[in-house]
Length: 70
Image (cartoon, rainbow, N blue to C red; front, side, top):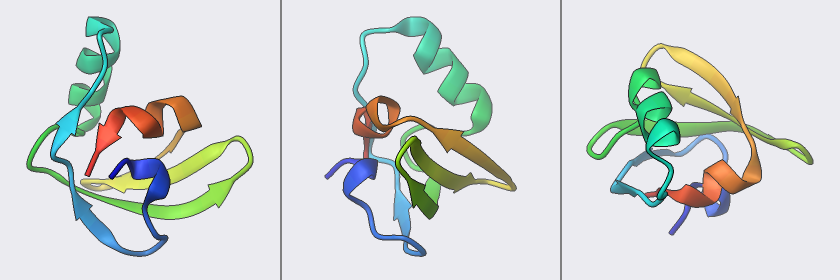
């Protein structure tokens, strides 16, 4: 299941990041979004999702949410 399909308010564990873009992979790693880390969808909007990773909240677009496997 991808992060885009996740329910709001439920904590999930990131299983994998499926992207061929190494820069994007590195960016997600700096946010703390990598395999084994918890992630929670805080809210949904047309433009994307607001997620909680570690102690931060971030807005991500739907394409990025599809790359995060939970």
